[in-house]
Image 1: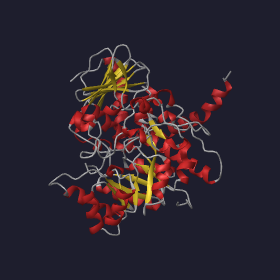
Image 2: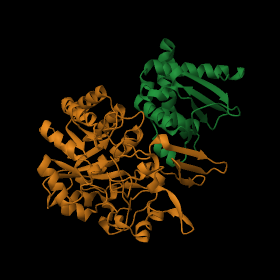
Image 3: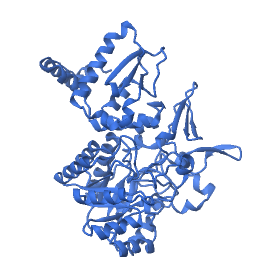
Image 4: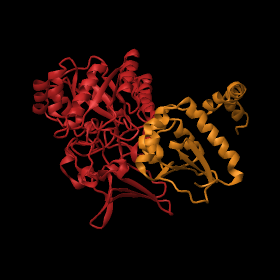
Length: 160
Length: 372
């Protein structure tokens, strides 16, 4: 098993905690994957120095530097916002593929299965994470909602 | 000719229960979907409905005033018809509003064993003339036929005046110039076909390679289908949309990556007497379904109120970044699609030139699509 660099461990713990928070609320997500749950998915967040390795069957996610060679069955590449949008069903995977905003390599069927499983799950990663924090999630949710509502106002204040 | 007395049904795809709910909430009159096996022509991994999910989905649709049609539109294999018959039986027991079948034997089974279950003829049956459609109506009490996309609007209008059943036509989605239900390109390349296995260009046989210069190469089985330059809009890896070298020139021999978009043709389509407009794309995500259903619902409502139809809402969802849409008021070739799409059929002049789908209503050549 590949080990991530010690300095990536905090980030990896956060990613793993988020994955488990989502899975706790949507335990059925990976049922749709069938045999593809055993696949290793490389998620390459192109605007960061990292890649994520998602192993659904192990309910695990790992983080590596992009420069490191990581063994995977399939790879999905895109910007952070594009991949986050895709994970939450906010973007159409085919359209993002047509526009070249995402690229895929390796086992195409495995990628398709993951896309379909996530699309059906109706995820909201941020709110699932807040829920997992229990009592402490409430002020964070309030802050997040306030930030979203204030964002256009703040943007407008600094607009040219 | 039949005159439309009310707006046609908006028949929308759903590949997952979540997509079904999105379609219903966005304004679909009907959602069509399939069981998670090879009885339907969108048998992709992670897609489709278990028996429990189908029963729940039908309940959800009915609760919200929508209908559910179940596509059982592949062809049963010799000695293995049980799976298909069971699918029809289950659809009936779950309270589906109709089943969409392609196989003549399955149509007979449905008519005999479930006479009260509404029977629709899938586009996969490729019934595109009066005699064929009337036969299905007479023999199996078919209530609606999904017309192949190789028909023009005048042909659809003519058919509607002589056949005893309703017609449903595709209004948005992928394009294909092949005779549906009879295409063997995918089978030739991979051993699997949409007709028998429910998969065109099965993902298990598709590979993409990202090259260092930013280009992307797509392969289907042993065949290189296309090579897209950096930032060039991509298409599906189907042989019919492959870019090949012919007489020393690389280009699209059959068809370019393009989507059908009939928003600008709605007034002509509605006057043709169709009973339902179908959106292709059970393999697409919730975002696609929501966007397309909303656009068509708004377009139909605008038409009913005599307002202009907004026709440019969906280009971002189109395969290859181009569609058959044409600007409002223009009766020529398509807009986004025209830049590379027009030349195809006149130049190669094959049989499908008659098709050029509903988009031909205005007289200009256009393209066609596939699948449900």
